[in-house]
Image (cartoon, rainbow, N blue to C red):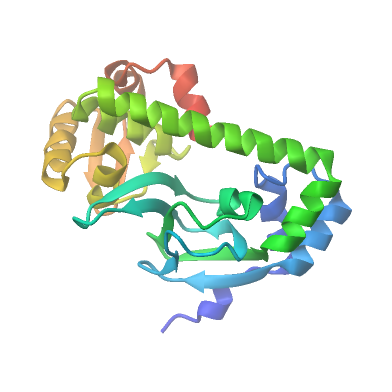
Length: 242
């Protein structure tokens, strides 16, 4: 059996992840060092729910490794996925700053190591730091932009193009580029049924634009996917960096 403790990062690794997190980007070394002392790292397994929609915000969570999914559940059991976050991004930021219950549930969709930071030290630091406050504003603006684009996509694009756009947004910069999620999560992101999304992926694979592997999708013709989704290549790059 693997030793889970081997996955827990050192303080140096934690500081490096915080420095790359968009929320804390540009903070001076002493501020990052102070923040590191507040971090509790956790090793969480696939399927672990970090919190449910409506829970009170206790911690800001930064992804050190793995992937987390922010979603809103429905009475029918289907999920509306708001974000899929990997390292070094944060979840729970909206709730800890507006001090209201979480808008969405968060689940680990891969084995992950997360960095939990109590809400109050982050809020206190933001009140004293112009740079951190600016980063918070940029994060919130990014959330609004993403949700507005998702709403527009649901109204304007058909399912196949929503799938292509979602793949481009979530792709990692590997060679070839890859998306490390399963079909169920992708269906929730694109707003379609799992069977329909599977059929779309099969069609795109037959066109030679992607390759399906267990738990992973390889994007082998990114320009073709960009054209199909109606994305300018520069826009797709910005989506992946957000």
